[in-house]
Length: 274
Image (cartoon, rainbow, N blue to C red; front, side, top):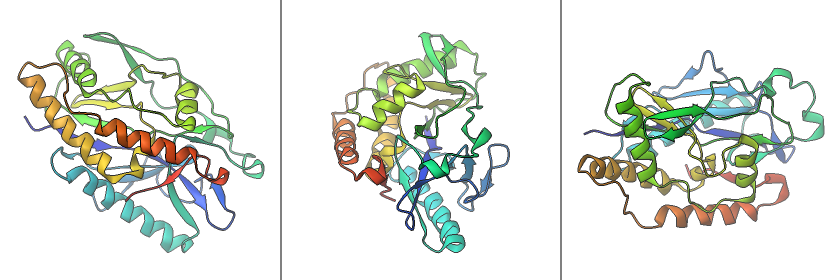
């Protein structure tokens, strides 16, 4: 078994001149329909009013995952610097809003038009979760979505795939972490709560509960990747529970507490540890 992992997190831009979080519109290339391909194999695009980037899928061992994230981030920073000469910084977060004079004329950028996310009904079926149709410019939620490859290639309606995703998601135990104030607001705005929100893919699934705050600690990326590998090995051996200690929860708790202490201009966002 060769589990793979990737991600497509969303980020805020902080304007060093205005000293506040601003929309990413007209500041980065790419779109949902035509992402900007990066030399690293990842991508970057404007997603509504925020920046979204993706990594190429890599084997979930060692530092492959954090290295892939670093490569994408390095390219994005270079593009921003070459165009704006240090005016903007990347910030990970959960939910933030824009200044009054930037809330005008955002139009369709506030529409939520991507495909729905799902929750489990049982171990062989899922159902669509209710979502929002339009965001408030004062409460923009962003995710830190992770893609888990289960070393398979099945139709997304295949009960074997759904059952494998169900067992993996439960065994990974990524829902019990301590959440920041802004993360709780994001989950409420997106209607997630403590329910696993996901999209099943032919290779595995996209886990959508995490905000992008986990990017504030580089070690979390490889911790999740190695947990993914260990979980797949355990499930293949017939085990159904992950026994990996509380290191993930400890790190997420530390990030949540740090984000809650940020100056109000940062709105609970944090710099990337990449």
